[in-house]
Image 1 (cartoon, rainbow, N blue to C red):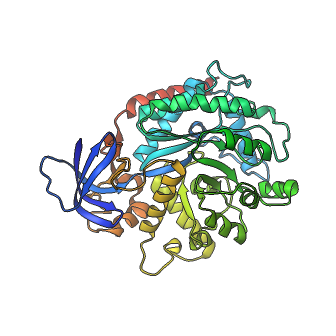
Image 2 (image 1 turned 60 degrees about the vertical axis):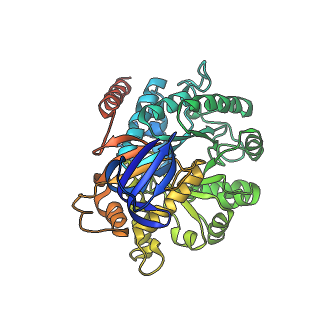
Image 3 (image 1 turned 120 degrees about the vertical axis):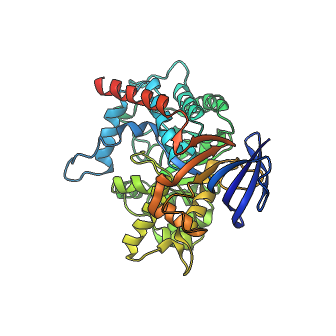
Length: 453
């Protein structure tokens, strides 16, 4: 049993002081506000429940900044995708592990305690499966274990280039599997995640572009129970192509055909009608929002006001990992709404409410649900994943309560993150990951090799 003592902590019932937390086997066994410090290790600062990153493509961290030169006149997600295809041709399994470990280290230092890895880079550069079909899944699991981050691994099914079962493009050869091989890959991934404490396994049909309806249904029926994540309605062209194929929009099709429920996370969902927005909210599925990547790619702005008004749940992710910051994703989400509606504190929804508190708590709940794990709150039975902010940080020292969250999300950001605890174990102290030097050196060496390839 590990016994910790926090000066202040955000509990499900609200803020509390002098909080004792007893941890066994990585999980919270007891919480006592107003406790004595006796024989407990004091962690100075402001304790928050750990936030899950519910959408990451870890390998893309190494190409951050490589697509920031102006392309054709209609530079967009689709031209960015060509840069990504060229980049991934060079990656070895060792590179992927080094890049993922670096990305996960940065996530921890930036206020995330868990990641849902939407993993679609499966095969070698010419599209041949590795001797171990789940080689790349194993590399992701190894990176998570080294960094200490909590993991939900989501092997991605990719079989077609666009709607209607069109043949895949040559550039997509590293992603591709049919039904049988994908299910064998999932079996291998299940073995791989066993090395990561409390890891979860789900599946990620890449998108309605990449699978046929029959394939989607067959794989969901045959795969183990767990989260189901899918990209949908990220770009207008995708919506137009889906309408041309099916007569329906992507989220509309999913609502009609797949009986969405709490297992599902619909990633991006940027372009929805009001009816789709209400339907997705009512389904219980999580909207997986990645505001910094969506802004970087020029995707558009998610209709968060109508979605939350309808009772929807969201979580946040870092997607292409161009900038890894938990607070920054939530700030970008709110700021995009301010630009859309030309108003302030939009997502607090009611007068007198803290915008930071509301954003953080909704993202906690959505992150836990989409991860398929017992995380997202400082309560008995949950994983002991805790973010501790520096109480003496100049932007936090003179305030308290919900103001701490407002200052963290909108002002101090990752500079306020002092300690990160995952499963009861401190992996970041004084803002620095315990293995930063080793992980950074391997990442730098991988980038050098890729650049010379």
